[in-house]
Image (tube, rainbow, N blue to C red):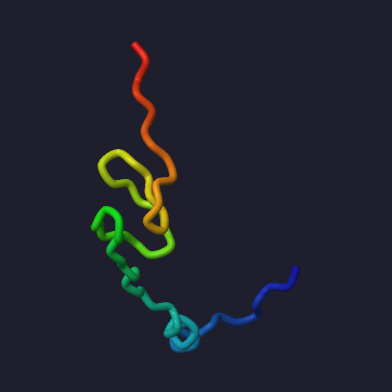
Length: 64
């Protein structure tokens, strides 16, 4: 397997890493519940799972 013969400089590594950025997640307000959530992700509101403003799943009651 090929290995580098010489060490990469710090400048060369830094140039490559300039494109790595931390971005803020895009938030939306659900039209049904009014909850703030990350876009294109299901979210829980009052124990119920919502996606695109529709109820997807409900928490089942515990059996005694």
